Image: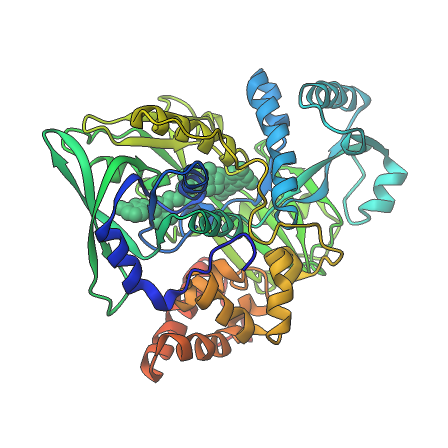
Length: 522
Ligand SMILES: Cc1cc2nc3c(=O)[nH]c(=O)nc-3n(C[C@H](O)[C@H](O)[C@H](O)COP(=O)(O)OP(=O)(O)OC[C@H]3O[C@@H](n4cnc5c(N)ncnc54)[C@H](O)[C@@H]3O)c2cc1C
């Protein structure tokens, strides 16, 4: 299967046995983009690596982002030149190693005066220079006629034009999965649905951990021995730190952001539009296939949750700002295809609003030697992973090759494809395998079980196929055929299939709790 290992969800017993049998150089807690990126980098450098994920790969923040690979323009305003350079170069790396997961779209910032246009252009010039942005990807200025031609549904009464510059969009969950599969191909032992419930400490040092299955009916656990442990648990970093003796203070601040998906026909945009909300924050409308998604909000919240609540005020905030900026018929709750919310693991800074807190990553070493990594962005995950692995290698006192992740393609990213449909964008070169197997829901679901470690219907529906958010009726019609195909491989009986489907429908229903009831709905 190309550059990625096949993760067969039917072979979990062997994974538990291997985890128990080996002593690993590095054990990573958390299979979001941070943990997955570290696992890939470390395994490619020749370290023996284990990655343990409590739920599914990317089931935390790494499937709930706005799915943008930021080039770093935003860091210019903060005067952080190093971060601008790193972000600009990282997105080029991603395009090289995973072209299907780094799709260029113009980002369009409408302008109201020549002065704002000039300010933006000056910022973009500096950004392009600092980030060595290729000539073909430099910004353009659109006058009102050009804007009307490109984005006819944007209200133009107070505008004088727009500045457009290319940014990259990705599928965050599949980017995470690609890193996990690449890590496994390089020898890492990876396992999802395996919660790290305790640390094993000897003489005050963490020397291992206990991981237990979180899958219904799977009574398995492993005692895993480690030379170095990295806590990459995202918003759950503080919770995992608290497993170690004397490492219980709270360092993270959690902020929630929601997104709303609409049919592209309801909100027709050709590019990603940056819109101004009444509180002067930027929100955006992003085209993806037959859909447009809106995001996002940024509010502190207490506690961590895999499925954070989506409140009416957040929905209204996005819809009202969009309605004010776009000349489209009133958007109704019934138009909403799906919604998702995610929580940002920010490093707490007293007295600041959520939107003002820095998105920089930080590394802390706990009293028992566990390295915790927090903050950071999806966009620069690879560079961050490389810094962490440098620290791990130094701790181990090893000589290893330098980081290889910038040059070796991720699974599916071996070459640029001619096509650009849904399968191409999700699977890259592996789209051919899905097509050869029938190209339908059942083919995707079988692939998810046999090669992508999907052990529940939710794993397939939300994170392997993105149907929960980017399919008609939130992909509800795909649930039965997917459960049927997965059930054959995973020996699900009728009751188990029904439970899996019910769980997904319940997630969808919960996400809509704040919406008015659909008069034509169930
Ligand atoms: C609304 C929103 C929009 C965003 N938009 C963007 C964007 O457009 N671009 C961008 O670059 N960044 C964006 N981000 C930030 C980005 O999504 C995060 O920085 C990134 O996904 C964090 O990844 P992570 O691996 O650190 O955390 P996570 O993805 O949350 O991964 C942590 C994992 O650890 C697991 N875990 C927890 N406890 C345990 C345990 N005891 N044992 C085993 N596993 C455990 C969890 O299940 C989870 O899967 C956004 C974030 C949000 C919330």
